[in-house]
Image (cartoon, helix red, strand yellow):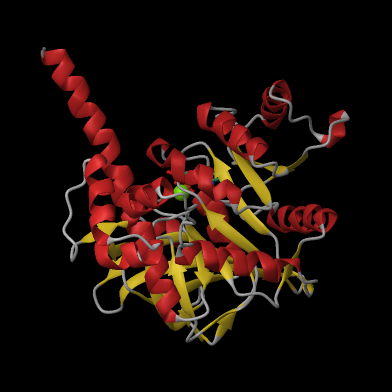
Length: 371
Ligand code: GTP
Ligand code: MG
């Protein structure tokens, strides 16, 4: 549909091929009667003959329109677990805190003790689920962390009671504010002799986070991830803040979710951890993830258990993608595999076009610099 033979275009326009070729020549296009010309050229020449041309809709446009239509139908909303992002300065104890919450020991296994990826896990507390995202604390991953905040309902800001507010603490506050996400502060490492929780509260107040006991609105919980103190209080506060937000999601929709991490696994191929936003993702669903098409071959939860489906706020490992998507990419279930494949092609084409542009500009700039 993107190209048309000159002869066919002439007959559709109701003009002779000779007339059409002459008009094409006036537009500096040399074409023979049997040659194919691109849509843009055909459209321009058709307009010369007094036609108005409608661009054929892309597969993606048609797909998105159908989704929008479906979204207008009243949805069946169900309560969903809160998605919590742990943020904070390097070494303030994000991973250790999450470990304690999960009762596992990820930090000890991590290379160099620095989190290299965003992990997503679900924990159960008081019979209710909370989804946690462990965002990287290193400065190099600031962009990824910014994306982490977008899928988040609540930010837990970890501040070490000995270190106090640091540059990445302030960055985290700004990310959470930009995403309009409520902040709960975990004042960590209160076991340390040099810990000074009041100084942390003072510093945070200067950045607009005033603790409740000082007349403000920010929940601050003193904890020691190392000694497993204050953890139950922290979880309770998370549920409390979550309840104020009445978190719900439609389930009777084609599923969608956000990629939080993805890599190529030697045995299993591309593997993506996806946080489900809406709907219920099922084994066998055709999907488009960013520019990557696929069909869900298997689903695995954060405990490594195979699952047949995953609903809102569930972090789930998806197998069956044709390539490795990017963190932050949106996963969407499509009506069929063909639609997913065509959307993927269109998006890949657009990405290639966008990648070419800055290079061309740079070349021009360096040329003019040379002149
Ligand atoms: P990055 O991922 O590198 O940003 O660090 P992080 O914020 O995840 O910190 P991590 O959990 O790796 O902890 C950093 C160091 O602080 C480790 O040596 C922990 O053992 C220590 N630590 C974490 N929590 C506590 C705490 O409550 N008390 C004390 N004393 N040390 C802690
Ligand atoms: Mg960490």
